[in-house]
Each structure stands twice: as C-alpha cells, then as structure tokens.
Length: 195
Ligand code: GRF
Image 1 (cartoon, rainbow, N blue to C red):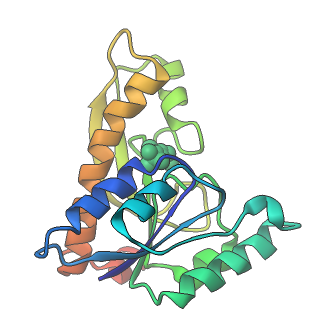
Image 2: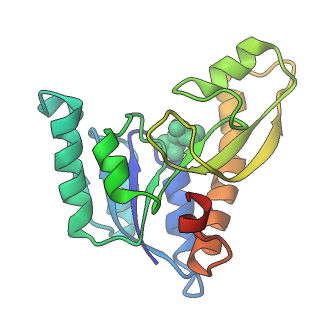
Image 3: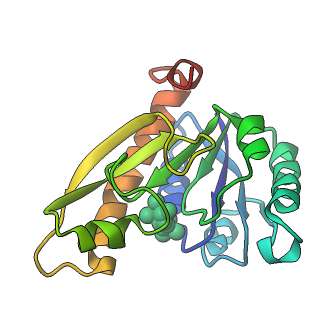
C-alpha cells in the first residue's frame, strides 16, 4: 500500500509509520511526505530518505488554489492512501472529494467528542476525566467522517495540554499503524465505511 502522509508539525505519528514500515512484513510504505509549511516533521523524511514536498499555504491567494496545488503534488505519487497526520489545515471540499475515501485523519480526541483544531485543550477545559484518540475517514466536515477506530485516554488531575497531548499521541500512533495494517490487508474497506 503506497502512503502519502501530510503534516504541519513535528510529525511524531508520521515517525511511527516510518518506523513500522522499516519492517519488511509491514504491507505499506510511505512514498512521500507533504506539508503546508516548513514543518519540523520533514526532518523525518530526510532521516528515512523519503521524498518530501511543501505546498506553503501562505504562498497561495486562497484555500482552493492551495488545495489544487497540494492535490497536484499528491497525485504525482499515485498513493493508495493519503494520511493526514497533524495537518493543521482544512482541505477544500474538492480535494476531499478527489481523494475520498482513501483519505484518513488522526485526531487527539474520542470523536465525535471534541472535534476541531483544539480537541486536547477543549477536553481539558470541559473538566472530563477521559478523552481519547481517533482515526477517521475524512469527509467534507470537520473531523466528522466515519470512525475507523478510537480509544479512550485518561485525563489525569495535573495534566496540562502538552502532557495530555503526549499521552494521546502514544495511542494515536498505535491506532494509525493498526488502521494502515487493516486497510492494507482488507480488514477495513474504506469504500464500505464511507458509503
Ligand atoms: C496529533 O495529535 C494530530 O492528531 C493532531 O495534531 C497532532 C500532531 O502531532 N492533529 P505530530 O505532528 O504528529 O507530532
């Protein structure tokens, strides 16, 4: 299974995929890594010798033209699956439509709880004792697509946004690697899930 992974930040979940694909048995490989900015996580591409591309959001007059340029770059690699792993931009509808359902996203909350760009902060602010991590099929909404997998993560009394997010990320990357495995071996059928 050929993967293109899109990031905006440190790419810790991406790194877990790269490490998993080091195992010859792993039925997927990251063929390219893309970002909407000069993301720190591009260093993982360098380290693992994976091609990368940057389509800077700020270089485009609007989201649509950025999305078109991003889609063009993604298509060059003919991926079987595109993974948003810390991409902090909403994709334009036509990009989602073009890639769906072979387009999945990781989210640091127990969807449909706490969607959006501040899921960790929102869970903390809500004063609940548990949140979670999720992998979903991307649809044109915000973190509203069909859920592939999700797992609860405890919120501890003295958690800060970063201690909680770090704990969530550990679960996210397990869910993500498992989701890629399940998609590669047919346990998960994205077309069926998204239908
Ligand atoms: C992850 O928790 C992802 O779900 C969220 O932002 C975080 C990115 O972390 N959208 P990293 O860049 O993978 O370290």
